[in-house]
Image 1 (cartoon, rainbow, N blue to C red):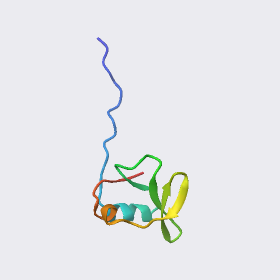
Image 2: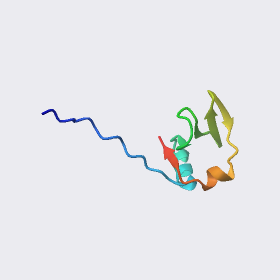
Image 3: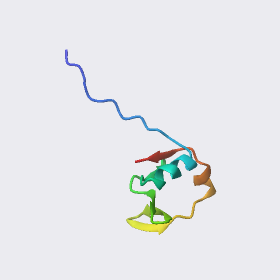
Length: 74
């Protein structure tokens, strides 16, 4: 009998927006669980940026993003 020894999928740790921003201030990328994999936020110099469709923009945060509790850090 063969036993499957593949690793378990990594569990995602979700956080609220203030915690995600704290992580972004130390150089990590942040994104909502519902966003496409290529879309994320990060700090560049003194600005919070959003990377979307292969371009970077100054991020204008929506109320929905600010209140969300499904933020991921990578």
